[in-house]
Length: 113
Image 1: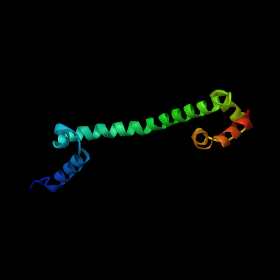
Image 2: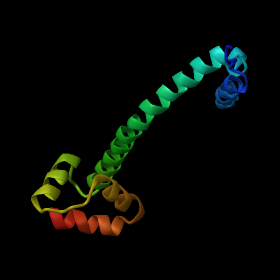
Image 3: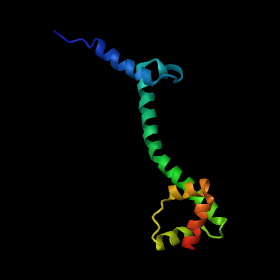
Image 4: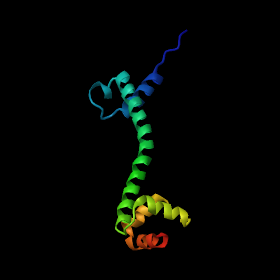
């Protein structure tokens, strides 16, 4: 006697169609197209989680460069001075200081200059 797929297949298909809600055309209703779209969306999501880290690092560097320029220094010399003085502040923390607390950032620049 053969085993029919029954509700198991419909459950799996329903899960994929729910993930494809809001997609246009057959991509939100037809299982085959929805599955393709959901898999592609997953690939993009995975890649963009990695890209997000690069993008934020670039933003932090830009902010630090702009803040350091006000004190007559450039980014690369500032980072080198931080390394030489063994200041353990990362770029994220430095950019937060530059944006939210310029006085403290000025003190950091003065300390390494």
